[in-house]
Length: 295
Length: 281
Image 1: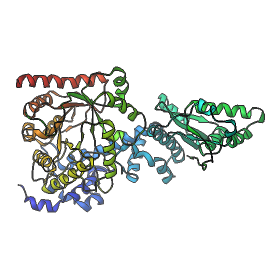
Image 2 (image 1 turned 45 degrees about the vertical axis):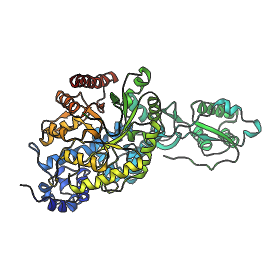
Image 3 (image 1 turned 60 degrees about the horizontal axis):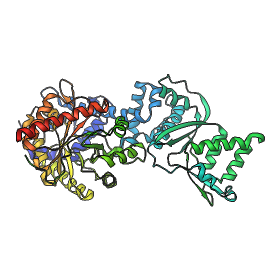
Image 4 (image 1 turned 120 degrees about the vertical axis):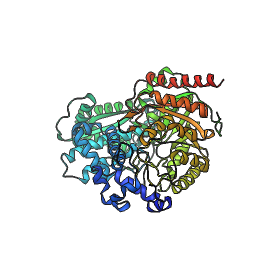
């Protein structure tokens, strides 16, 4: 028997219905736990479910709500797996699913796009230092976040060897380089490159190794690349990306190396980075302030 | 048989622009009436997807289909999002912009699901008000898609087809009519899909969607993961007779096969369109 429509509308205003359904859908437990959760009960008591949701010929109201509830975490997991494939590869499907459940509870999507859902995953591992492998997972997630940021970054012009050669000799020392928008430089406590590569090749993930590691993430021809760096390469790239003038940065890098081969090596690195398209432009003028990213 | 109020072109048959097909589309330049993009995939990126889209938009008509307009939500409208949608529509010279009759989140969250509305007078007024504002901001009509739904609310005071017809009229908006969604919801809720189709104001329909689904026995999920089933093709034919020919899109978004498979499925729609044109003549 149908109740009076006005009474129903008053009992279940649109805003209440929406807060209730969302509370149930995003709850990480089973459907009956979700319906009985304090967030859901505050809006619609579980005892009133039959007054709000109709059964179908084959499903109860609980089962019908569970269709939406069941799809929520699957959708979040699919989105995060797309941005964090090496993290999933390392953890395995079950542990990754549990991670997603905990993560989206703390950092639910507040954006119109799922592309930014995973932006807080490195921070999540800092929030939970007691989580198994948390320090390593923080470093791995930082590298994967850099990859997804590089993928979506605005396209930048690429500095060419020709434009570098056009710099007057007297301006060389004070010239500064501007990295492309996709450029990301990371320093981590754990080696993460082997994990990124093992996931790409479908090989088993190695055990985490605590070893100071340096990585640059960049984009060329709309494809994203990662390159492992030595400590010396990292220091120079960090200087250059931070706006240290070329002359000063190169001198500092050469001083860190053996005198005989220092400058030669530094210029070889520099040529590689320019050829890989890591820099957008060169400016002859006052230097910018220095800053780098640490995983 | 009617024309749509805005005289949007009948672009023939189209497919969704999806990453696994980028290389094929740019390399082979297949004969496709139009491509539909998932709006949100192109809003905050300066990377490869946007670079590809710019090239595709130079050669083919583009239509935009969003999932985050959240027209029925009781949260405030996201004007920053709408500004980006408007800019993308301008960039791609989109023929039209569409989204869904649904809500996706409240209290600042987005579930990224197309959640169902209770079909009440309150929800109708609220949603119509928002759609009018959205159209004012975008400075173009919006086409709203009938959703696949898996539950019905007891407090609903009208059917889904009554709600959608009244919403389109009161908001003065267009409709994107998804034939598979009618089939899915008709199975899930036990109504006659032809009753639904008969109630749709044809002059507001700008575009049709077709897709495959997943039958779970007790209910059907709108998964866009398979071929269109025969009963949906039959309903498409019925819709063509009832409403008339419109641009028709084949959606395939999960377990995506090679482009030729998706395109061949889309071209079946052209066979149905031709058949109905002959029948009408």
